Image (tube, rainbow, N blue to C red; front, side, top):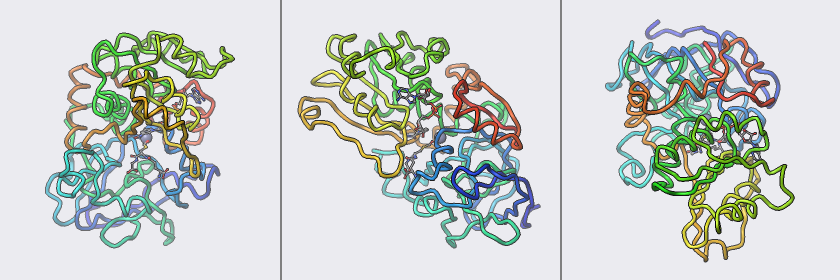
Length: 375
Ligand code: NAD
Ligand code: AHE
Ligand code: ZN
């Protein structure tokens, strides 16, 4: 297909919350600095549901969602040197160009090279989409759009991985698992012996627990409204479970009471601004650090008494767990291959692209961690 338009199946979101439609989509060839990827497997992340809900200020319709996937390079545009057709890859919504002010700073994993385009659903070079249905353009999403058999991404958004890695598993290393592990290892830098609280025990929260366990945390308190999550969470390192529904007091008071004044580190993995406040306020005076991981809807704001910060608590946030995507995703794949990190354990369901609406229903019903779609 090199140099030609490919017609393939993709799940198109035409309007907020309206069922995705499996369409024949035309995918243009990659232009200079772009890569066309045959997506083999994609998982669903809560962020896809968030944008589909219409609450994402960057959400544009019609679009092709999806950002946690793995596939094989089909063709590359002019000037692309780091990958070639046949390479096994993971698309990265957080790019890494290694040249911009952000990449060079050493202080962040955010990259500035293509972010202006990925936030408005187009490619950087001509500010146009590579997707269309019968001539009508369909927006990209997060620079990845993996709910499609073929997608086009910027070359700075592709991590080349070990071809021996099972793509149906390592697709998870495109978002949720690295986000949780990195929130602990890179953003909070949890030390051995720490007391940790994790709010929200979905894939991201469970990966936080796993990261905290490997960092040697002495207690890992999991908080979720769904008590069924506790049995699962134990396998990821959660040592104690608290369901806010079992308590009359604000949950921060409950946690402070359980921990002699508060936790050393807390992580909000839900996207709920009142839980973000609770997560900060359950931190220990003088040093407790709270990391915001969850993505909150447009218009939502966080608040607390400034006294909470004056008295030494620290409020932080993380995107993709602070990992530099192209450099570190291959390393995470190697860690998985050496059985140093879990991945399979986060996959609760497998379906096909055609069943994507059912997969989102499952996510909303609960009882689902990651559902991997065979594209
Ligand atoms: P998920 O839906 O699988 O998990 C969320 C969990 O939170 C569920 O177990 C649910 O029962 C629980 N929950 C909901 N409301 C609660 C409440 N009020 N109190 C306690 N528990 C509650 O989601 P996920 O895919 O694990 O993603 C979690 C969040 O992280 C989402 O907001 C997602 O958008 C965000 N996210 C952020 C990044 C990043 O880079 N910052 C990356 C991936 C995901
Ligand atoms: N468009 C959203 C932003 C959502 C957001 O914060 N996304 C995270 C990744 S979530 C993956 O599941 C992120 O990486 N943020 C940094 C960035 O550059 O987008 C909104 O609310 O505006
Ligand atoms: Zn995600």
